[in-house]
Every structure is written in structure tokens, then in C-alpha cells.
Amino acid sequence: MKKVNKICCIGAGYVGGPTMSVIASQCPEITVTVVDINQARIDQWNDSNLDNLPVYEPGLKEIVEKTRGKNLFFTTEVDKAIDEAEIIFISVNTPTKTYGKGKGQAADLKFVELCARNIAKIAKTDKIVVEKSTLPVRTASAIKSILENTGNGVKFEILSNPEFLAEGTAVEDLLNADRVLIGGDETPSGQEAKDTLSSIYAHWLPKERILQTNVWSSELSKLVANAFLAQRVSSINAISALCERTDANIAEVSRAIGTDSRIGSKFLNASVGFGGSCFQKDILNLVYISRSFGLNEVADYWEQVIIMNDYQKRRFAENIISTLYNTVSGKKIVFFGWAFKKDTNDTRESAAIDIADALLEEKAEIVVYDPKVSAERIYADLDYLETRSPEENRRLLTVVTNPMDAVQDAHAIAILTEWDEFKGYSWETIFTKMLKPAFVFDGRRLLSQQEMEAKGFQYYKIGQS
Image (cartoon, rainbow, N blue to C red; front, side, top):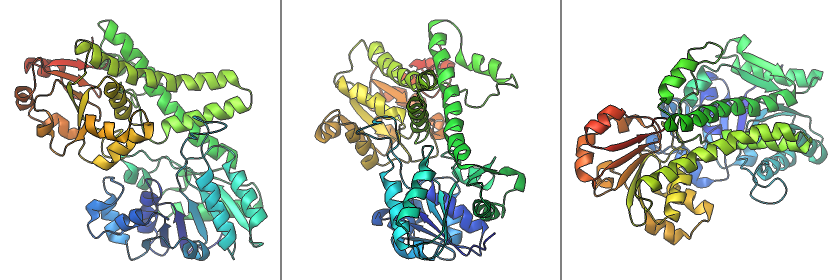
């Protein structure tokens, strides 16, 4: 087992930033350097005002404040950090391909490959290279092949160490992880590398939570864990549609089945649909891998989880349109929330994006308020869809910083993120500002139907008739 003095992480995003901050805080004797070619992002990580960090996570700024400049550094000097580190984490973006073979399903590995080629070019001493990004199975072997065929005769051990962070609780998930998964080769040097990485996590986690596997098992476990969680969300959402047509209440159904110890209550909250960077991407990867091995029934089974999620979002948008007398053209609809869930500023695959897109197609005028997501991010999300011109997106959709300004003369409010602050609003005041009838569409089941109806609202909650 090697002694580790320096760690480098390539990629200063939602995974790299928090993970390395926690490692630095728990391993004061190790120098941790996070590198990224995006100067603006590195500047944000180094900002003296900790409210300007690029990632919002409860508890993160306190850890960064304690470690930054001592043994935690953020820099654009990629090559220097690679050269000095004994362990290199690759934590770059792996978006779903938007072109070519596997378009819409396979992960785009160009950033990972660029990383591997750069490591091969620079490394002069033996390195442990750890894949930390959400990656499809077989990426480790691709990285290995690049490193072994283009390097300077340096020995590389490739490990898979997938992250299981939930955004909004990432710091807590790191400090108190259910398990850490470390996959590597079953060779003596592979075992030594696994033990070296294990020893870092063992600074703060009990040994029994650090699981070692082969590379395939580690890579596949990450996809499967997310697929199982997403499957639960789609399953309860399918039942929510049924509840709305009958007199069943999804909250009662969820509670009734959640108390069964074999099922459990987590991830049984019906909503407008799941978002986030991993669920959809990982399931599509699973679908793609299954199809590539000719396992079409397996692929169809998992693809249905995504189809159900898309249906839930479409159903919510269609309900708004049909309730507002089948036309939303020129009507002001307020979105409370744009992030894919509370306590994060991440908007990847957020339900709000698709719902906005559907309503903008019907010429609605949308006003968005989210406590943590910037206007720049919201417009970027819409422009990425290429459904209409950036100019039209900006003409039809406005972003505001005060929720009470947003609701003046609104026809309807759609609650799309479960931010706690929405529960504390003076809904009586909101009612007086809106056009009547005042409609609220609660996509997160955040408010009480009785209370909202008593205040005068026409109130629609997912999973209740």
C-alpha cells in the first residue's frame, strides 16, 4: 500500500468539488488539488465570498472555508497537478451523446478520453487513476488502453470509484456514506491500488463500508443503483395517474405500501417527474449496454422507466393547458422552482425545463422564480433544446428575484421544485394579486389541498382527484 501525499482531481463540478473538499477536510496530511480548464469556474471556487461557490450544497462552504489554501487548492494548472499527484481522480462531464451512434442513449466520453491522453503525456511516475464521473461500463478498460499505449513507460492502475451522492445532501452523503465502492483489477498491483484508495476513505469511514469489487461490478453497480431508485419514482408516478382518475389519494397509497418493510418508504413521493444528472443518463446507459449485447427485453424493461417519467411531465403540462380552458396563449404562468430538487442549484434534466418548453409552444408567458438558480442558467437550459430562438425564449420567459413580484396578475402558479420556503409564503396575499379564478398546480405535493381551497384557490395536486 502506497503512502499518499498528493491527490489531483480533474473536473471542478458537482462531484469533484464537494468530494475533494471532504477528502481534504478528513485527511489534513494530504494535499488535494482540484483542476479545471474553465477559468471562470476555478475563480468561483476561489472567491473570497463563499456564497459565490459554483456548487450550492448545505455544509459545503464551511468545509471549503476551513481547508482552502491549507491543503485544498483550486487551479487551472492541470499539468503540474497531474505530474505531482500519486492519485488522479477523473471527474469530468459525461453527457449523453447528441450525435452519431448511440445518440440519445450512450454517454459521450470525449472529455474522459482527453483526460486520459493528457495524463499519459505528462506522467513520469507511477499513478493510480480513479474514474469518478458517472461512466458507462467498460470505460476503465478504454482509459487503461489509452494510458498503456501512449504513456512514457509509466505504470498505471485504473480504479472505478463511482459516486453515490444525492444533490442537496452531498456533504452528508460523503461524510456518512452507506458504502464506498472501489473496483479494480484482481492482480497484486490492482489489489495494492484498491487498498491505497481504501486507506483514504478509512480516515473517516468504518472498514465494512468500503467495498472492493472487480471493475465491471463497480461500474455496473452505479448504473443499477440509480436505475432501481428511478424505477421506484416512475412506479409511484404511474399510480398517481390512476389515483387522479379514481378517488384514491397517492399519499395514502404511498404510506400504505411504504410501511411494508420489504418495500420501504423512500423514493415513493409522487411528483412531476425525476430530474438530475444521473437517473436518466444512467438508465439510458443501461439500455444501450443491454441492446449492444442483444438483450432487447432487458433494454425495453428499463427504457419504460424513462418513458413513464416523460409521460408524467407531459401529463402535468397538458393538465395546465386543459384546465386553463384549453388555451394558455398570452396567459401569465408563474413557475415556483427551476432546480430539479430543493437544496441544489443544479437544473440538469429538471422537469421544469420540459414543462416550460411545452407551455411556451402554446405561447404562454412564463415567469420563473427559484431561490438558487440564475437567470443565465435558466435561459441556457431552454436554448439547449433548440425548440425556438434564444430571442423568443427571452421574450416569452422572464426570471425574477422576488416571488411576490412574479404573481401579480398571474393566471396560474406551477410548483416545480419542493423548496421549503414555498410552504412559508403568505398564500392569502398571493391570492389577492392573481387573476381569478386563481389556479395552483402543485407538482411536488407541497401544500395542503384543504388549506389552499379554503383560501380560494383552484388547486390541483398530483395524485389526487
